[in-house]
Each structure stands twice: as C-alpha cells, then as structure tokens.
Image (cartoon, rainbow, N blue to C red; front, side):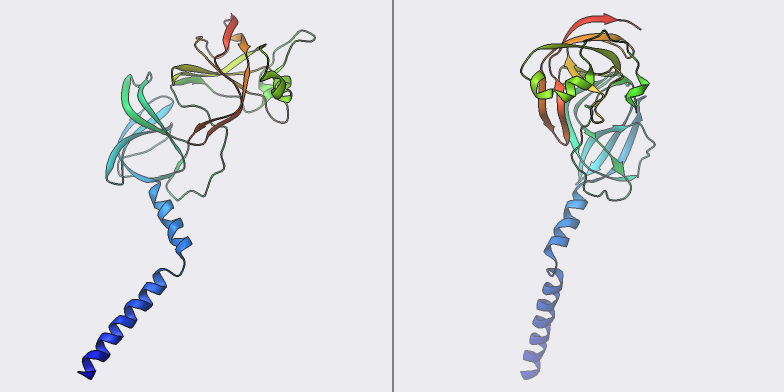
Length: 243
C-alpha cells in the first residue's frame, strides 16, 4: 500500500512539474501561437502579369490569396503579415471572378517579424509602377500653380476646401471597392511625400497628364494595414491629356 502511494505521488509530482515548465513563459507561448496563425500551404498557383493567385490551405480551410507577382509552387509553405478580404473580386488579368479572395502584403518562407502599419496600395489588376524617386517625373507648371508638395505640406487646409491638382499618372488600380485608384506625381515632394492617391470613377492610363478636383481625407484607415495619411476620395477628372 505504501509503495502504491509512493508511485502515485511520484506521478502527480511529475505531472505538476511538467505543467509548471509548460506554463513558465505564457507570453512566449502566445507569441508562438500568433506566429502559427499566419501561415498557409499552397495547393494551386495561377500566375497573372501583376499578381500571383494562390489557392491555399490554412487551418484546415481552403481559400484564395493574391500576392505581388512571384514564384510559388504547390507544397510551398508561406508566412504572411496582413490580409485584406475582397468579395466578388474580378481579376482582369486572368479573367476570373473570386467570391472571396485575400490580398496579402508580404509572404515569406520564414516567420515574419511584426510589421509597422504602412501606406499600402490597394490591390487590383493595375498598370505601371510608382516611381522610386519624385525626380523621375518632370512636369512644368505655371507660376502659382498648385503642386503635390504643397498639397502634402498644407494637408489640413486642403481637407476643408475643394482644390484642383495637375500631375502625371504613374499607376492605376482599377475597380477596387467600386472605384479606380489613381496615383499622380508632378516632380515635387514634401518631406519625402511625392505620390498623391486619388479615388475616382474616371478612367485614365499611366502616363496621362491629368487634373483632378476634390478634397483631401486625412488618416484614412481601410483596415488590414492599408492606411493613407493623405488621400483624395471621389475625385472629379477635370482635364486629361493622353500621353
């Protein structure tokens, strides 16, 4: 009897010690759990000219994910940071409509460190590429004509009054949430800001010289890490000069 009690005591002590070790660092365990949440395995790959569309398995569920164009193959396992859900999304580049698809900022075969919110570009089939430097766009403006740099420098003022701004289209994201997302530059910058995003129903192409009219929206958060400190929403196209 004493021997049975001793064995039971040893088993209980071992169990308690094991539990203490497992719960010694709950913060670390939580961190590992969070890291494991943002990971998927690729089961199918559809390549477009701008985006790579991945059918993936995540937490036993199948879903479609879109990332910037890159190499991927079935069986690859990727970690990701943020995902923006889109419903009834039609991709022009592969001529396919997805009931639900998730646009992901970044994927990696190794766990990603925590990312800071960034001014991300809305997903869609688009043309062109945002210039890396403002100097890459040259646009002669009349004396006193409003510049992109002034818009950023006086953003609070232009959020309360309608204004017109002329620039060159450097990128177009078509029909995201029912709008076209147009990026314009004019060669000027303010504290590193030289690319103004405008949502509109107007249709323009990369290289067009355009004038838009509207008001600024400040600190616009669309969720999932898509944040704009300055954006012109529902801009009206005043003039367009095709390149």
